[in-house]
Picture 1 (cartoon, rainbow, N blue to C red):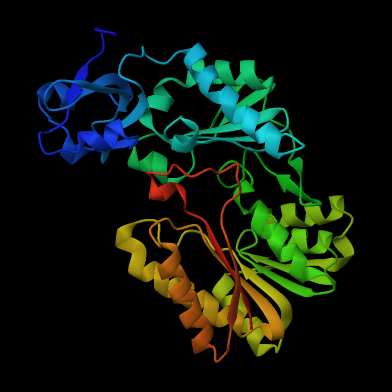
Picture 2: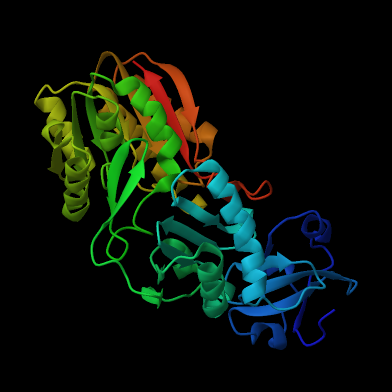
Length: 397
């Protein structure tokens, strides 16, 4: 066992058994904090012991975060190096290569893939890393080296966007970690559609792979349909619907650059003649469409996280209810409504309740026909409810 690592210790009433059984996080109120532990630099790799000084795990520490320590490995392991990262990336890659025919997917999904707080999305020969925990930020060099070694990618980019890095006290500065950033948006094939991913100026890592199976379900409803995709980003549900034979898709988003990428994707997929876009606040645009008497056979709303924390839950649920109410009024009789949430604080039951209430407030009767989640390249850590964040509800009205 490595003896040169700093040691942190659980309080007597902390649940050491949970750590032994696979729980990945240790909160700040579970750790004995003294001047020495408070002085540890964010990202320090340490040995975690129980209250009786029995070794529990190798952890990455951040004294400035509510999540004080993240479990990295068994107690006897040494500090992570390139070989350690490669050992974790290799099985993650093997699973994705089993699932997908082309190298476009989430390669590493944080705790569930053994790299706590680390998200890696792959876009062909380029990988985009979100190091959302201090320990990963401190070890970016060996992580990058392992990523290049295992995948053979020629470029690695760091995306510093997102709320999680702020909670860890990390910067918001993007960087090129290896190779060179793509000079133009990268075309990404998915469900028969082509999406354009801006890996340097787009949201998060450039594209949301998590909706892939929900796009596929929506495609089954879309043949010959008039489709409205609200909060469309780069055309997620709209382009998928067009690839499946929708008569027309209207994409609505507040970002003109995102809509421009959606239009480029429509052009690349040969469906531009059936595509249109409307920039504006989603609530305002849905209200205006209702006043215009517009009706669609399929309406899908995929908003940002309205409830990113427990403190925001009630306001977030009201927002989801409002989305459902406005969207339901735009669905033709016998048509379909898809409602999505990426808020981990709003569990499935609460989100479903808010959505169903909104549909009722619109004066519509509904049957829930399908519940979807993130794709298999976004695995859940079984002891971390937060990793199962995405919900998609499809109703027939």
